[in-house]
Length: 283
Image (cartoon, one colour):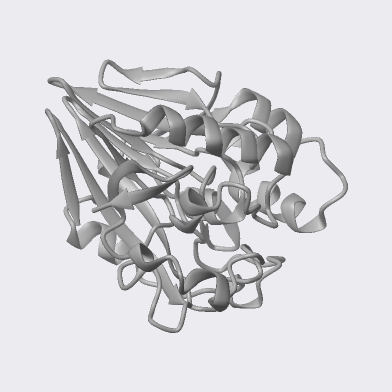
């Protein structure tokens, strides 16, 4: 799946798609609550009200650049909270290469934040060691985000994520710590969308008068357009995360900005429009 924004192409590379089983991340999104939101069905939920979700990377090709936004779960990882996310043996790298993106062609890896499903393929296991998967890339981590997760001691699972998927990038001198408004190239820059994590950023793309936004996880699913108050269990600061959703959705209403969801399944992208006092996504 691809989208064109002026001179920029965005390509989706899927690692994992699911229907149902999402209450662990969005507990308010019960089947009974989802079914009345008719515009979600069938693209983003099934007839029974089960959410459709995706874990995917987005490859952003701008003039002279090949940028990977978020790197999914990865293979061989351990210590993850979700049992099926441990010891994975998926074909993500093969799918990436078949789409025309060999590992060596990626010049920048951008992590919107440092949660486990956004940093996994930063590294790969080679002879018992975690080594950078994309050896020619600069890896961009948010400075605030990195400061938090490199020092926290409350969550053993996130410590494991840091040790196998973030720390080795710093050890290889491939990491660059950037601010929330960092410009990657003239067409691609970050914008703050904190709350889900301390230093969460989304990605803005602008080229030849066309615009797009890659969400990251300030919204996990389009149902949060209908219910911006629905928090994710992974939100670091739920109040700030909710305020971020309201702010960004209000800013996007009626604007010709293609919203590309980092976990949105199916069509994945669309435009935010008003729906009474809340919002919906038109695809």
